[in-house]
Image 1 (cartoon, rainbow, N blue to C red):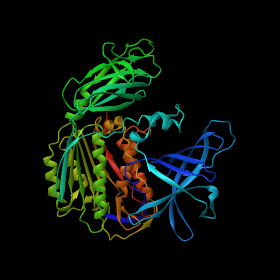
Image 2: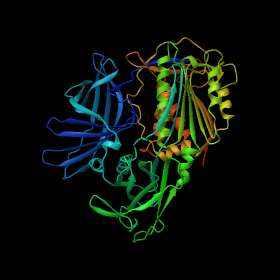
Image 3: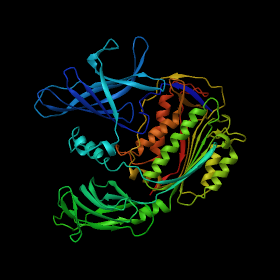
Image 4: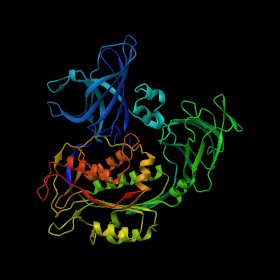
Length: 573
């Protein structure tokens, strides 16, 4: 069983899609134009950089952090605010003693679609006695780093020696989605899809201790040879460059200090008016998919050209695309009159999450949805038996719906309330493990207590924006390729209910745990943090977030909030 908790789940235009960089522009009272670059992952830590030019021509950059929170006016009108604090100057083109007052951003005027229509900015001097005075209109834009970021744009906010500069510029060329061909069959009650990559996706991994710049020649999908560059790759980082149906690529590379060069003097080609010697790269087999070429420095102190070698990770692409498949089984009680729309959102969002992850690392995947008329034990067992699970596969079973547990029993994990005969979460986990996959993960977003009638509970503990999917390939590979074992997770402790959201307009949102899990996955596999790709850390963060949001809800056992847990045997190569 999942209980309903009424939440103000706020979206500004379409901010609930998978994005986490935003640009805000506004004009100050003196006519100064401000531009803010916002990195948003969670409401407690919103990073802001602001650039502007004052009247005497001085160019300035300030930085600060915001905390997202609700604010109420005297008439009861509710806003969502990015509350800025602790601003400091980062750069000024002329000597100046003038500091910076952190800006705040307020979202208001929610429409019938549960979306904010207006954005304003103000500073703390405009907030008097709890009222917003002298607020200024602002414009808002979602940013796609692959398209909207340039080195010059990032440099206008950051020094080149700041870690954010390296991180953000690495997103310019490495966030394009994989092109795939997908075969999908579906009905009103169940669906499945599978994907194989039908081209070569070249990536370079820098195994030197210096950053390198790479230029390539490749055959595009119009059968034209093109030169393209430059990609700057930090040490120990991997960057996607291009796709082609031809397994032959050419490249020219050099360290950013120019002391090491990878080239071929006999294969000169023009790029922007200059000749470069391109080395040949050829995949040793015909298997489509991700192909990583290692750039290694054999003599890292040399000042001569062509003294280093490049090794091609042909077995990596073969392993990803031939020997690994991700099977997702998503089971959702979409027909339930109370929580059906909530679990339907879970079904769509979880499916989208794992599809994107699989495509990013170029592995085959199968999406299997059981809902509506196939929300029963026999359909689940039949689907598992039909998957053809192989020893190097990954199987993820995700359940969203009602659940229960006899609190007098010894089983810590709940039962799934299916149409017809019910099924224990632990029982299905054992059955999936018996199929011999390398990695088996079972997740349940369901109650773990005796059933009870659900009633609406009001709360204001929801963030307005979901985390984005700026996936780091190395972290995804650690999660799906370099891991083995099993994990079973439930969203609430024994004797506890699991709660789901409703939007302020009455429509249903995700289950609290599912929403927290998606956000936690995005953080764990993101390019813009120091996480290393750990299932244990990911689930722990999701449990903490779900418990924090439900901390005032009393359970059957007298405790407050839902306290998820798991049993985990996953290890990493």
